[in-house]
Image 1 (cartoon, rainbow, N blue to C red):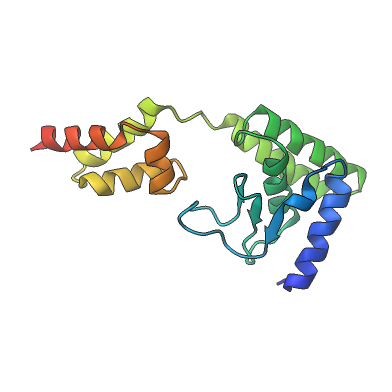
Image 2 (image 1 turned 120 degrees about the horizontal axis):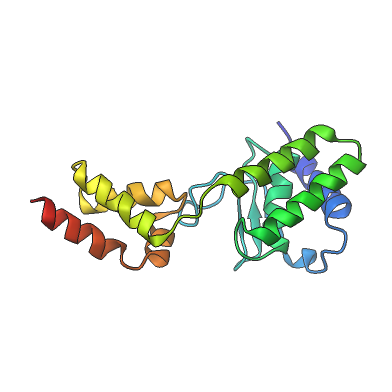
Length: 174
């Protein structure tokens, strides 16, 4: 396992090798810690509002660090801009002779490319399914949030009708 000092050396190397034109890099903080649970259920996370990247000390891999840094330089989750930036990092890895990293980065892109976009209809359907299975309103919301890889708070912000959908389904089940 890396020490925090070794990790920060790795961060500097990745910034220099994979993100040299990143002009605002000095305005970002990279933390060698799991992110706060009120932000995400993920082990590593890029939070654009606070310009903070958290990398879980149990998985301080180059792939994870590059994945999160790609979020920092591209807006909008795992969309086309992020995918293109990951592909560029994969090409860089290949240039540096790290074929395993290049393959892993391309695999990440492929996983997100193949993952269907979660729509509000899909999120609300998960709530209905949970209620049909006997879940309470709160448990249904928590389960749907988990399916979307979000905290409850982020889920409720994104899917504004989630509580009404859950309460309505719960009443209909009675």
